[in-house]
Length: 489
Image (cartoon, rainbow, N blue to C red; front, side, top):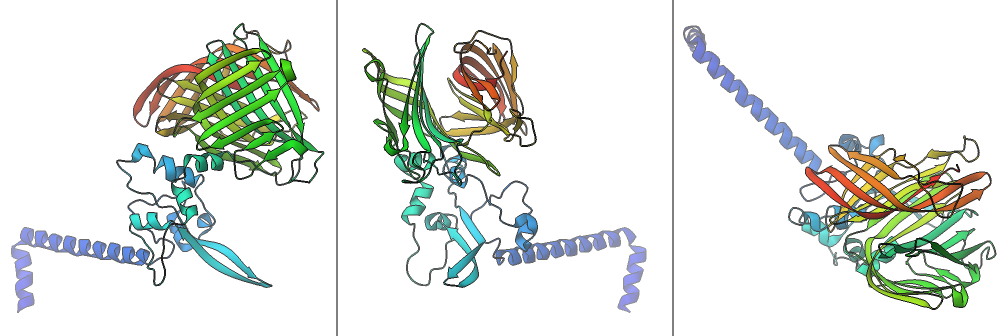
């Protein structure tokens, strides 16, 4: 009887019946979806590969989350480069302080091998910073004892200025000895519109530990002075390994009586070269807060090139004496970077500039091409452009070439010419920045080893920058230093 009434109702009230059926079907569908989503969330919340806290999980670009969860190839051994920089500045720094409450770095399910005697056990290990894990709502359930930040945790999250600059600016030992290995502290400072200094403390050769290959490596102090009259003076002293001290955990370096010391975020530089007619230098160098660029290292078989900028913009105070002429200065515009690697037939493009609002840093390395003719090079690193303001790195963009044009006289090498100007266009997604540089001064140093002849150009120039970054129009101008290599005319 009920079945008969139902069918008659469908025939008599067709529209109403269709509406009711559609509503019922929609309700059932929504319920199925909600139950499915709830079940998936429950399963993932119990998945050891996805356990975490907070509101956002950061993973490397291109990672397949499902493959990572199920152990696929794209999820093996992945890591986030320069995680300390992301934690301290890019995500957890002052730029996003109003949005990001806490950043919690996490290592989960890493494969390790535990050895005891002749027995090797495969284990899965993880690591967290207790205070940060608690802040994002994923603390461990401690059954006994205490779970709190260690000293290493505190240094990782919020180092003191001294800890930060020692970490950034430490020295390195090559994996294998190579006569073309070199590592150096580089500083430049501008005393006036027409006067500046290039200062380099350098190690080179088959650098080893104390007592190893002592006669196959050494150091050099290189000072170049651009005088107000436009002429250049160069001063150089070489040092045997016996009078050199460097530290793989610190920025400190000693070349005989010339030293670099970093304490409380301030570098103290002393240099002596050339005797009574040479140079005596004493200055303190203070990097501006947040204006640094993290270490990057390019590796390809035996080719290694590393670079870090602890002081993209800085202030220098002190005195420099050339012979009996001394000059004292205060808060002079300055810059500092640190390089290490194998430099056989290696060239680069580099620039650093300071405007009213932004500081610019760009670079790229041409490494040796094993398949090319002697003296030829191949690009081994992508070119980058970093735009930096008072809150740190604002954006990092990419570019593929620099357009040099014109020709001008040059100091130091009659066989070489410098460009009059150059341009580059850097992009990243919707961001685009164009830089134009007008060269106002240039110095050439001839490099001629084993058939590899180039002119190393150190240029001073006036720049303008314009474009759009993160939805904001940017424009600035100022002065900077720029480097490139040119072939003889």
